[in-house]
Image (cartoon, rainbow, N blue to C red):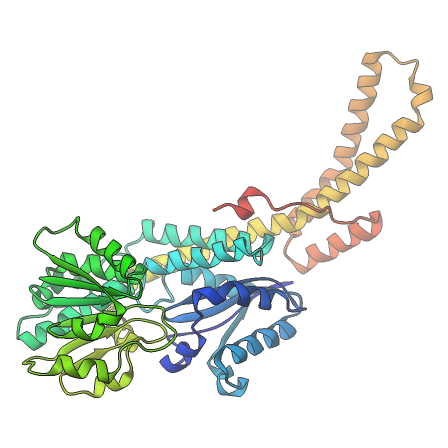
Length: 460
Protein backbone atom coordinates (compact mmCIF):
# COMPACT_ATOMS: atom_id res chain seq x y z
CA UNK A 1 0.00 0.00 0.00
CA UNK A 2 1.13 3.58 -0.72
CA UNK A 3 0.32 7.08 0.47
CA UNK A 4 -0.72 9.13 -2.57
CA UNK A 5 -1.64 12.80 -2.96
CA UNK A 6 -3.27 14.21 -6.08
CA UNK A 7 -4.17 17.88 -6.28
CA UNK A 8 -3.84 21.33 -7.76
CA UNK A 9 -2.84 24.64 -6.22
CA UNK A 10 -2.18 28.28 -7.07
CA UNK A 11 1.11 27.35 -8.73
CA UNK A 12 -0.18 24.61 -11.04
CA UNK A 13 -3.70 25.69 -11.97
CA UNK A 14 -5.33 28.94 -13.10
CA UNK A 15 -7.83 30.60 -10.80
CA UNK A 16 -10.88 29.54 -12.82
CA UNK A 17 -9.90 25.85 -12.51
CA UNK A 18 -9.22 26.18 -8.78
CA UNK A 19 -12.69 27.67 -8.43
CA UNK A 20 -14.20 24.61 -10.08
CA UNK A 21 -12.22 22.36 -7.72
CA UNK A 22 -13.27 24.22 -4.58
CA UNK A 23 -15.51 22.14 -2.31
CA UNK A 24 -18.31 23.53 -0.18
CA UNK A 25 -17.98 22.45 3.46
CA UNK A 26 -21.45 20.89 3.46
CA UNK A 27 -20.46 18.52 0.63
CA UNK A 28 -17.19 17.36 2.17
CA UNK A 29 -18.53 14.37 4.16
CA UNK A 30 -20.35 12.96 1.15
CA UNK A 31 -17.31 13.40 -1.09
CA UNK A 32 -15.03 11.78 1.49
CA UNK A 33 -17.22 8.68 1.57
CA UNK A 34 -17.47 8.60 -2.22
CA UNK A 35 -13.67 8.51 -2.48
CA UNK A 36 -13.31 6.05 0.39
CA UNK A 37 -15.68 3.65 -1.34
CA UNK A 38 -13.28 3.24 -4.26
CA UNK A 39 -11.99 -0.33 -4.63
CA UNK A 40 -8.34 0.78 -4.60
CA UNK A 41 -8.57 3.41 -1.84
CA UNK A 42 -8.58 2.38 1.82
CA UNK A 43 -8.25 5.80 3.53
CA UNK A 44 -8.83 9.39 2.42
CA UNK A 45 -8.42 12.99 3.61
CA UNK A 46 -9.64 15.88 1.44
CA UNK A 47 -7.86 19.22 1.94
CA UNK A 48 -9.51 22.22 0.31
CA UNK A 49 -8.44 25.83 0.93
CA UNK A 50 -8.50 29.18 -0.84
CA UNK A 51 -5.63 28.16 -3.10
CA UNK A 52 -5.54 24.35 -3.19
CA UNK A 53 -7.60 21.18 -3.38
CA UNK A 54 -5.76 17.97 -2.55
CA UNK A 55 -6.81 14.36 -2.06
CA UNK A 56 -4.63 12.24 0.25
CA UNK A 57 -5.26 8.50 0.14
CA UNK A 58 -3.81 5.19 1.20
CA UNK A 59 -3.87 3.33 -2.11
CA UNK A 60 -3.98 -0.42 -2.65
CA UNK A 61 -2.81 0.02 -6.26
CA UNK A 62 -1.26 3.32 -7.33
CA UNK A 63 -2.44 3.63 -10.94
CA UNK A 64 -5.96 2.44 -10.20
CA UNK A 65 -6.25 4.83 -7.24
CA UNK A 66 -4.99 7.72 -9.36
CA UNK A 67 -7.68 6.94 -11.93
CA UNK A 68 -10.35 7.04 -9.23
CA UNK A 69 -9.13 10.42 -7.96
CA UNK A 70 -8.89 11.83 -11.47
CA UNK A 71 -12.47 10.75 -12.12
CA UNK A 72 -13.46 12.39 -8.81
CA UNK A 73 -12.00 15.70 -10.03
CA UNK A 74 -13.78 15.24 -13.35
CA UNK A 75 -17.13 14.87 -11.57
CA UNK A 76 -16.30 17.80 -9.27
CA UNK A 77 -15.37 20.21 -12.07
CA UNK A 78 -17.77 18.90 -14.79
CA UNK A 79 -14.73 18.71 -17.07
CA UNK A 80 -13.26 15.77 -18.99
CA UNK A 81 -9.90 14.67 -17.53
CA UNK A 82 -7.93 15.80 -20.58
CA UNK A 83 -8.86 19.41 -19.83
CA UNK A 84 -7.24 19.48 -16.37
CA UNK A 85 -5.07 16.36 -15.85
CA UNK A 86 -1.88 18.21 -16.83
CA UNK A 87 -2.58 20.73 -14.04
CA UNK A 88 -2.63 18.05 -11.35
CA UNK A 89 0.43 17.08 -9.34
CA UNK A 90 0.79 13.51 -8.15
CA UNK A 91 3.12 12.39 -5.34
CA UNK A 92 3.36 9.02 -3.65
CA UNK A 93 5.09 7.50 -0.62
CA UNK A 94 8.09 9.60 0.49
CA UNK A 95 7.29 12.40 -1.97
CA UNK A 96 3.66 12.54 -0.80
CA UNK A 97 4.76 12.67 2.84
CA UNK A 98 7.28 15.42 2.09
CA UNK A 99 4.60 17.39 0.24
CA UNK A 100 2.20 17.28 3.20
CA UNK A 101 4.96 18.27 5.62
CA UNK A 102 5.84 21.26 3.38
CA UNK A 103 2.17 22.23 3.17
CA UNK A 104 1.83 22.16 6.97
CA UNK A 105 5.07 24.10 7.39
CA UNK A 106 3.77 26.84 5.08
CA UNK A 107 6.39 26.26 2.38
CA UNK A 108 3.78 25.53 -0.30
CA UNK A 109 1.49 28.49 0.50
CA UNK A 110 0.97 31.72 -1.41
CA UNK A 111 2.20 33.38 1.80
CA UNK A 112 5.22 31.43 3.10
CA UNK A 113 4.76 30.44 6.72
CA UNK A 114 1.09 31.42 6.90
CA UNK A 115 -0.77 30.31 10.02
CA UNK A 116 -4.11 29.58 8.34
CA UNK A 117 -2.92 26.49 6.46
CA UNK A 118 -2.01 24.68 9.68
CA UNK A 119 -5.58 25.06 10.95
CA UNK A 120 -6.93 23.98 7.57
CA UNK A 121 -4.80 20.81 7.58
CA UNK A 122 -6.03 20.04 11.09
CA UNK A 123 -9.64 20.71 10.07
CA UNK A 124 -9.39 18.38 7.06
CA UNK A 125 -7.94 15.62 9.22
CA UNK A 126 -10.50 16.13 12.00
CA UNK A 127 -13.36 15.78 9.53
CA UNK A 128 -11.87 12.63 7.99
CA UNK A 129 -11.51 11.13 11.47
CA UNK A 130 -15.11 12.03 12.33
CA UNK A 131 -16.29 10.42 9.10
CA UNK A 132 -13.93 7.46 9.67
CA UNK A 133 -12.26 7.81 6.28
CA UNK A 134 -8.89 8.44 7.97
CA UNK A 135 -7.63 5.47 9.92
CA UNK A 136 -4.27 4.11 11.11
CA UNK A 137 -2.10 5.22 8.17
CA UNK A 138 -3.37 8.76 7.57
CA UNK A 139 -3.96 9.42 11.27
CA UNK A 140 -0.30 8.82 12.00
CA UNK A 141 0.77 10.88 8.96
CA UNK A 142 -1.42 13.92 9.64
CA UNK A 143 -0.59 13.96 13.35
CA UNK A 144 3.09 14.12 12.43
CA UNK A 145 2.43 16.78 9.77
CA UNK A 146 0.87 19.05 12.40
CA UNK A 147 3.93 18.59 14.58
CA UNK A 148 6.11 19.64 11.63
CA UNK A 149 4.00 22.77 11.11
CA UNK A 150 4.16 23.77 14.76
CA UNK A 151 7.89 23.15 15.02
CA UNK A 152 8.58 25.16 11.84
CA UNK A 153 6.80 28.18 13.27
CA UNK A 154 8.35 28.02 16.74
CA UNK A 155 11.94 27.27 15.74
CA UNK A 156 12.25 29.63 12.74
CA UNK A 157 11.02 33.08 11.76
CA UNK A 158 9.08 31.77 8.72
CA UNK A 159 5.80 32.94 10.27
CA UNK A 160 6.91 36.45 11.18
CA UNK A 161 5.72 39.55 9.36
CA UNK A 162 3.17 38.56 6.64
CA UNK A 163 1.79 35.32 8.03
CA UNK A 164 -1.55 34.75 6.30
CA UNK A 165 -3.52 35.42 3.16
CA UNK A 166 -5.78 37.68 5.24
CA UNK A 167 -2.88 39.83 6.39
CA UNK A 168 -1.34 39.93 2.92
CA UNK A 169 -4.67 41.08 1.47
CA UNK A 170 -4.93 43.88 4.03
CA UNK A 171 -1.36 45.03 3.43
CA UNK A 172 -1.79 44.90 -0.35
CA UNK A 173 -4.93 47.04 -0.05
CA UNK A 174 -3.08 49.44 2.25
CA UNK A 175 -0.29 49.85 -0.29
CA UNK A 176 -2.77 50.50 -3.09
CA UNK A 177 -4.71 53.07 -1.04
CA UNK A 178 -1.42 54.73 -0.08
CA UNK A 179 -0.54 55.08 -3.76
CA UNK A 180 -3.99 56.51 -4.51
CA UNK A 181 -3.66 59.01 -1.67
CA UNK A 182 -0.10 59.88 -2.57
CA UNK A 183 1.36 58.76 0.78
CA UNK A 184 4.42 56.54 1.07
CA UNK A 185 3.79 52.77 1.06
CA UNK A 186 5.92 50.38 3.10
CA UNK A 187 9.44 49.92 1.76
CA UNK A 188 9.76 46.14 1.61
CA UNK A 189 7.58 43.10 1.89
CA UNK A 190 9.20 42.03 5.16
CA UNK A 191 8.28 45.41 6.66
CA UNK A 192 4.68 45.02 5.52
CA UNK A 193 3.10 44.38 8.89
CA UNK A 194 -0.44 45.38 9.79
CA UNK A 195 0.97 48.54 11.36
CA UNK A 196 2.89 49.28 8.16
CA UNK A 197 -0.37 49.43 6.21
CA UNK A 198 -1.49 52.51 8.17
CA UNK A 199 -0.20 54.80 5.43
CA UNK A 200 -3.12 53.79 3.25
CA UNK A 201 -5.72 52.42 5.65
CA UNK A 202 -5.68 55.01 8.46
CA UNK A 203 -9.04 56.78 8.43
CA UNK A 204 -10.44 54.57 5.65
CA UNK A 205 -13.95 53.14 5.53
CA UNK A 206 -13.72 49.36 5.11
CA UNK A 207 -16.22 46.60 4.36
CA UNK A 208 -15.63 42.91 5.07
CA UNK A 209 -17.97 40.45 3.37
CA UNK A 210 -17.92 37.18 5.29
CA UNK A 211 -17.68 36.50 9.03
CA UNK A 212 -15.73 33.22 8.92
CA UNK A 213 -12.07 32.65 9.78
CA UNK A 214 -10.83 34.85 6.93
CA UNK A 215 -13.25 37.62 7.82
CA UNK A 216 -12.22 37.51 11.48
CA UNK A 217 -8.55 37.77 10.54
CA UNK A 218 -9.12 40.67 8.16
CA UNK A 219 -11.27 42.49 10.70
CA UNK A 220 -8.51 42.23 13.33
CA UNK A 221 -5.83 43.44 10.90
CA UNK A 222 -7.99 46.35 9.75
CA UNK A 223 -8.61 47.40 13.35
CA UNK A 224 -4.86 47.39 14.01
CA UNK A 225 -4.23 49.33 10.79
CA UNK A 226 -6.36 52.26 11.95
CA UNK A 227 -9.44 52.22 9.72
CA UNK A 228 -12.09 54.71 10.76
CA UNK A 229 -15.14 52.57 10.03
CA UNK A 230 -15.62 48.83 9.55
CA UNK A 231 -18.82 47.20 8.29
CA UNK A 232 -19.16 43.41 8.47
CA UNK A 233 -21.59 41.90 5.95
CA UNK A 234 -22.65 38.26 6.13
CA UNK A 235 -25.40 35.98 4.86
CA UNK A 236 -26.28 35.41 8.51
CA UNK A 237 -26.69 38.82 10.12
CA UNK A 238 -26.28 37.21 13.56
CA UNK A 239 -22.80 35.97 12.70
CA UNK A 240 -21.87 39.41 11.39
CA UNK A 241 -23.08 40.91 14.68
CA UNK A 242 -21.00 38.35 16.62
CA UNK A 243 -17.84 39.39 14.76
CA UNK A 244 -18.60 43.06 15.34
CA UNK A 245 -19.04 42.35 19.06
CA UNK A 246 -15.68 40.60 19.13
CA UNK A 247 -13.94 43.48 17.34
CA UNK A 248 -15.61 46.00 19.65
CA UNK A 249 -13.26 44.87 22.40
CA UNK A 250 -10.35 46.52 20.60
CA UNK A 251 -10.14 50.20 19.61
CA UNK A 252 -12.69 52.43 21.27
CA UNK A 253 -12.73 54.94 18.39
CA UNK A 254 -13.49 52.39 15.66
CA UNK A 255 -17.02 52.69 14.25
CA UNK A 256 -18.44 49.20 13.75
CA UNK A 257 -21.60 48.03 12.01
CA UNK A 258 -23.03 44.68 10.95
CA UNK A 259 -25.40 44.09 8.04
CA UNK A 260 -27.02 41.20 6.19
CA UNK A 261 -25.92 40.21 2.70
CA UNK A 262 -29.06 41.77 1.22
CA UNK A 263 -27.71 45.22 2.19
CA UNK A 264 -24.41 44.87 0.37
CA UNK A 265 -25.20 47.38 -2.39
CA UNK A 266 -26.07 50.04 0.17
CA UNK A 267 -22.96 49.30 2.23
CA UNK A 268 -20.64 49.69 -0.76
CA UNK A 269 -21.64 53.33 -1.14
CA UNK A 270 -19.01 55.44 0.58
CA UNK A 271 -16.58 52.55 1.18
CA UNK A 272 -12.87 52.99 0.40
CA UNK A 273 -11.95 49.31 0.45
CA UNK A 274 -13.93 46.06 0.34
CA UNK A 275 -12.71 42.56 1.27
CA UNK A 276 -14.70 39.49 0.23
CA UNK A 277 -14.01 36.20 2.02
CA UNK A 278 -17.08 33.94 1.85
CA UNK A 279 -17.35 30.30 0.80
CA UNK A 280 -20.36 30.99 -1.45
CA UNK A 281 -20.52 28.69 -4.49
CA UNK A 282 -21.18 31.60 -6.88
CA UNK A 283 -20.20 35.26 -7.15
CA UNK A 284 -21.93 37.68 -4.77
CA UNK A 285 -20.70 40.98 -6.14
CA UNK A 286 -21.32 41.87 -9.76
CA UNK A 287 -21.11 45.10 -11.79
CA UNK A 288 -24.77 45.90 -11.13
CA UNK A 289 -24.11 46.09 -7.37
CA UNK A 290 -20.93 48.15 -7.69
CA UNK A 291 -21.98 50.79 -10.25
CA UNK A 292 -24.19 52.77 -7.82
CA UNK A 293 -21.29 52.95 -5.36
CA UNK A 294 -19.09 54.58 -8.02
CA UNK A 295 -21.33 57.58 -8.65
CA UNK A 296 -19.70 60.80 -7.53
CA UNK A 297 -16.52 59.13 -6.30
CA UNK A 298 -13.26 61.05 -6.50
CA UNK A 299 -10.99 58.05 -5.85
CA UNK A 300 -11.09 54.38 -6.91
CA UNK A 301 -12.84 51.73 -4.84
CA UNK A 302 -10.32 49.05 -3.90
CA UNK A 303 -11.81 45.54 -3.88
CA UNK A 304 -9.80 42.59 -2.52
CA UNK A 305 -11.32 39.20 -3.32
CA UNK A 306 -9.58 36.38 -1.44
CA UNK A 307 -12.52 33.98 -1.58
CA UNK A 308 -12.39 30.62 -3.33
CA UNK A 309 -14.46 30.36 -5.44
CA UNK A 310 -14.37 34.09 -6.18
CA UNK A 311 -16.98 36.32 -4.58
CA UNK A 312 -16.48 39.11 -7.10
CA UNK A 313 -17.30 38.84 -10.78
CA UNK A 314 -14.10 39.63 -12.74
CA UNK A 315 -16.17 42.08 -14.81
CA UNK A 316 -16.16 44.37 -11.76
CA UNK A 317 -12.46 44.97 -12.38
CA UNK A 318 -13.25 46.45 -15.79
CA UNK A 319 -15.39 49.23 -14.30
CA UNK A 320 -13.91 52.72 -14.22
CA UNK A 321 -13.15 53.63 -10.65
CA UNK A 322 -12.49 50.08 -9.36
CA UNK A 323 -9.18 48.47 -8.42
CA UNK A 324 -9.84 44.71 -8.19
CA UNK A 325 -7.22 42.55 -6.49
CA UNK A 326 -7.74 38.76 -6.39
CA UNK A 327 -5.77 35.75 -5.17
CA UNK A 328 -3.42 36.01 -8.14
CA UNK A 329 -2.53 39.53 -7.03
CA UNK A 330 -1.99 38.36 -3.44
CA UNK A 331 0.26 35.52 -4.66
CA UNK A 332 2.29 37.90 -6.84
CA UNK A 333 2.63 40.28 -3.89
CA UNK A 334 3.95 37.60 -1.58
CA UNK A 335 6.24 36.06 -4.22
CA UNK A 336 8.13 39.35 -4.28
CA UNK A 337 9.12 38.83 -0.65
CA UNK A 338 10.23 35.20 -0.86
CA UNK A 339 13.88 36.10 -1.50
CA UNK A 340 13.96 38.02 1.78
CA UNK A 341 12.76 34.90 3.60
CA UNK A 342 15.23 32.52 2.01
CA UNK A 343 17.06 31.93 5.27
CA UNK A 344 13.84 30.95 7.00
CA UNK A 345 12.78 28.70 4.11
CA UNK A 346 16.11 26.86 4.23
CA UNK A 347 15.79 26.38 7.99
CA UNK A 348 12.23 25.04 7.60
CA UNK A 349 13.30 22.65 4.86
CA UNK A 350 15.95 21.27 7.22
CA UNK A 351 13.21 20.65 9.80
CA UNK A 352 11.08 18.93 7.16
CA UNK A 353 13.95 16.63 6.18
CA UNK A 354 14.69 15.82 9.81
CA UNK A 355 11.04 15.04 10.47
CA UNK A 356 10.87 12.87 7.35
CA UNK A 357 13.66 10.72 8.78
CA UNK A 358 11.94 10.58 12.16
CA UNK A 359 8.61 9.66 10.56
CA UNK A 360 10.29 6.93 8.51
CA UNK A 361 11.80 5.47 11.69
CA UNK A 362 8.41 5.50 13.41
CA UNK A 363 6.55 3.91 10.49
CA UNK A 364 9.27 1.33 9.88
CA UNK A 365 9.11 0.27 13.51
CA UNK A 366 5.32 -0.02 13.23
CA UNK A 367 5.63 -2.13 10.08
CA UNK A 368 7.89 -4.63 11.87
CA UNK A 369 5.88 -4.64 15.09
CA UNK A 370 2.94 -6.84 13.93
CA UNK A 371 5.28 -9.57 12.65
CA UNK A 372 7.36 -9.45 15.84
CA UNK A 373 4.20 -9.57 17.95
CA UNK A 374 2.87 -12.59 16.02
CA UNK A 375 6.23 -14.37 16.23
CA UNK A 376 6.45 -13.89 20.00
CA UNK A 377 2.83 -14.98 20.48
CA UNK A 378 3.45 -18.15 18.46
CA UNK A 379 6.61 -18.93 20.47
CA UNK A 380 4.73 -18.37 23.75
CA UNK A 381 1.93 -20.69 22.57
CA UNK A 382 4.47 -23.42 21.81
CA UNK A 383 6.17 -22.91 25.19
CA UNK A 384 2.86 -23.17 27.06
CA UNK A 385 1.80 -26.27 25.10
CA UNK A 386 5.06 -28.03 25.88
CA UNK A 387 4.77 -27.20 29.58
CA UNK A 388 1.21 -28.54 29.61
CA UNK A 389 2.32 -31.69 27.79
CA UNK A 390 5.01 -32.25 30.41
CA UNK A 391 2.68 -31.38 33.27
CA UNK A 392 2.54 -34.92 34.67
CA UNK A 393 6.32 -35.06 34.98
CA UNK A 394 6.42 -31.65 36.69
CA UNK A 395 3.91 -32.38 39.43
CA UNK A 396 6.59 -33.71 41.75
CA UNK A 397 8.58 -30.47 41.52
CA UNK A 398 8.49 -27.96 44.34
CA UNK A 399 7.09 -24.48 43.71
CA UNK A 400 10.61 -23.09 43.52
CA UNK A 401 11.61 -25.73 40.97
CA UNK A 402 8.53 -25.03 38.84
CA UNK A 403 9.36 -21.30 38.94
CA UNK A 404 12.87 -22.14 37.80
CA UNK A 405 11.52 -24.18 34.85
CA UNK A 406 9.18 -21.29 33.95
CA UNK A 407 12.02 -18.78 34.04
CA UNK A 408 14.36 -21.05 32.08
CA UNK A 409 11.87 -21.68 29.27
CA UNK A 410 10.95 -17.99 29.04
CA UNK A 411 14.62 -17.06 28.86
CA UNK A 412 15.29 -19.67 26.19
CA UNK A 413 12.47 -18.33 24.00
CA UNK A 414 13.63 -14.73 24.51
CA UNK A 415 17.21 -15.56 23.51
CA UNK A 416 16.09 -17.47 20.42
CA UNK A 417 13.88 -14.58 19.26
CA UNK A 418 16.29 -11.74 20.08
CA UNK A 419 18.35 -11.84 16.88
CA UNK A 420 15.38 -12.26 14.48
CA UNK A 421 13.63 -9.35 16.24
CA UNK A 422 16.66 -7.07 15.92
CA UNK A 423 17.14 -7.94 12.25
CA UNK A 424 13.47 -7.34 11.47
CA UNK A 425 13.49 -3.92 13.13
CA UNK A 426 16.74 -2.88 11.44
CA UNK A 427 15.51 -3.91 8.00
CA UNK A 428 11.93 -2.58 8.39
CA UNK A 429 10.80 -0.36 5.54
CA UNK A 430 13.27 -1.83 3.03
CA UNK A 431 12.81 -4.54 0.41
CA UNK A 432 15.05 -6.78 2.54
CA UNK A 433 12.77 -6.15 5.50
CA UNK A 434 9.74 -7.11 3.44
CA UNK A 435 11.45 -10.38 2.40
CA UNK A 436 12.43 -11.20 5.99
CA UNK A 437 8.90 -10.49 7.25
CA UNK A 438 7.36 -12.62 4.50
CA UNK A 439 9.77 -15.48 5.23
CA UNK A 440 9.01 -15.44 8.96
CA UNK A 441 5.27 -15.43 8.28
CA UNK A 442 5.64 -18.43 5.96
CA UNK A 443 8.03 -20.35 8.19
CA UNK A 444 5.94 -19.95 11.33
CA UNK A 445 2.51 -19.75 9.62
CA UNK A 446 1.82 -16.35 11.18
CA UNK A 447 -1.15 -14.03 10.75
CA UNK A 448 -0.90 -10.37 11.70
CA UNK A 449 -2.75 -9.48 14.91
CA UNK A 450 -5.74 -7.17 14.68
CA UNK A 451 -4.24 -4.24 16.57
CA UNK A 452 -6.52 -1.23 17.21
CA UNK A 453 -5.10 2.26 16.51
CA UNK A 454 -3.29 3.67 19.50
CA UNK A 455 -3.87 7.06 21.08
CA UNK A 456 -0.83 8.30 19.17
CA UNK A 457 -2.53 7.45 15.89
CA UNK A 458 -5.89 8.98 16.67
CA UNK A 459 -5.69 11.75 19.21
CA UNK A 460 -4.47 15.21 18.30
